Length: 427
Image (cartoon, rainbow, N blue to C red; front, side):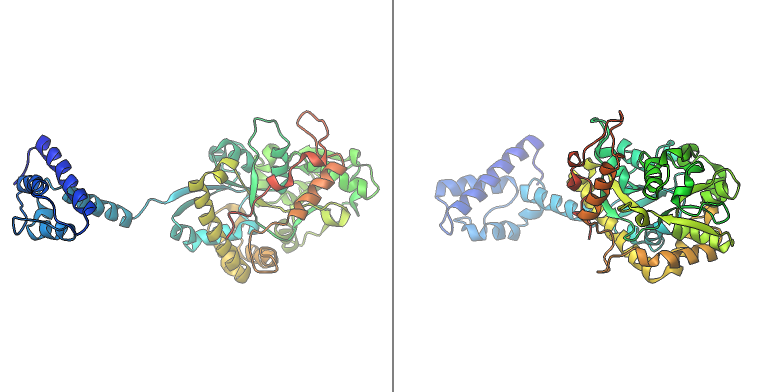
């Protein structure tokens, strides 16, 4: 029979006491007084020991079950049973996907192939993640911020950015978060400064006195000037002019996905920084000859570009870090697929619907050109080498490029290279 609520609580307490006492006594019998007290409890629950006498601890639950007490209202074991069933049902129910915002560094291109392929093939969904691939020209979503600044502001989970962005935040004002790289998107380098082949610019030193269309990165112009100096030219004479909002605010650049088209071919500038396996392929297909200067060929150990940047708080938080691990694992599979099947990678990028990727033949050619750069020699995606980071920091400091926001030079030893990146979340 049902027991009133106040009385039920008292019964439940006595019932639990009886059970604990029986366990404490092992296989011994309860005393008549103890058995009487327990009998009071069982009686109020509408049950009684089967033989009305002594109960052994090993038979305690069996006796109650035999009398139907487990299913009686008011029995504290019934409450436990119901809670267990509720917990199991909750665990079995589909869990809502965790939102992850990946801020891209440029319009969709083959540097991002693994992300788009992982999304197209449902790898993120299978990992319980709802991924937004945010293009930088979506100003309503980005707020006009670079990918790194979106991560710092907490409006993006991860940002695609060059490795100098991590170094920039490490040497920024003390109140800024020290963003760190959690994966290298590419193992090989695709960065180069280029000019039209008929521009009269034959080598980097010829950029002195000529225009350079800049994306206005903190160290970008200084790196270009260093390249000119390393080639015997006057680096200070390079006319660096910024593209609107890091290039994201220039409609012609965004629509084509290339400053070669919007700046060089339009005679608005003489040179710019490109990804050779994207803008370079686009220019080649348009039969537009370029002259490109790779940074590594002119004394600049450029490091990794791009990388995935995360907020240090996200890496330190166990729950968020677990989400990042699932994201990176799914992304690694996506890039491995992109390396093996460039056509599938191209199709996933084209499916984004961005106007710059409407030509599937071009995107496929670019995917084929980039396929060999995603993975390391061991077939692993995302790995980073400490010496490659250290070499880039050494170059920036040695050439006087590494400065604080107030312009003061920063010594190489002031930068903790190990704090710039982590492989702890990689599969």
